[in-house]
Image: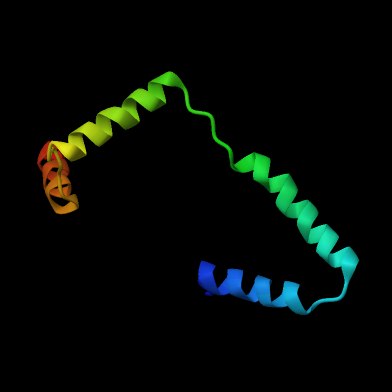
Length: 77
């Protein structure tokens, strides 16, 4: 499986060597169409939850994955 960086580099290389204007216009259209899809609007509740999470991280209120697994097992017993 190619890494994201590898894919990006291959696209850049292909873009630089091609002389196919229609291909480049098509690729540009794809990027233009997906740009607007990448913008995500968050609700006020989601923003509040993210702020609370950031606050927990800053205050060291963290639980490791292994501790969380242990608590889950205890709760399920």
